Image 1 (cartoon, rainbow, N blue to C red):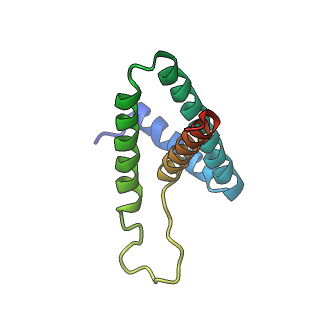
Image 2 (tube, rainbow, N blue to C red):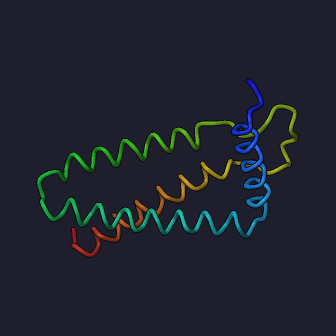
Amino acid sequence: MQRTRLSTLFDTANNQLNRWLFNPWRRISIIVISLLGGNFFGVAIAAIAGQAAQQDVTIAIVLVILSELLNRLIYGRNWRRRGQPPEEPLTVPLFYESLNAFKIGTIYALILEAFKLGS
């Protein structure tokens, strides 16, 4: 691939973002924001689907399928690199950790909505 100004700009921005996210507190804050965003998404889905009460089953099936696909994506991979000693902790990319936190927040919100409704 040719080194153009645009590709150099993207590479530089990506490197700066990776260095910025290397700080554990920033990483944790992004995961917490994803968890809270998933909670908001779950409450919004429950409110929208519950208002019309016509697509409840379809939305539930779609959410279960998405949740299972994310589980397979996140937990189905072997994050340990070859030749890495087993004592070192597994390193999961931040994007996958954020997706998992979003999924957990969504499921948590849906469970809380079910408890509020008493069903």
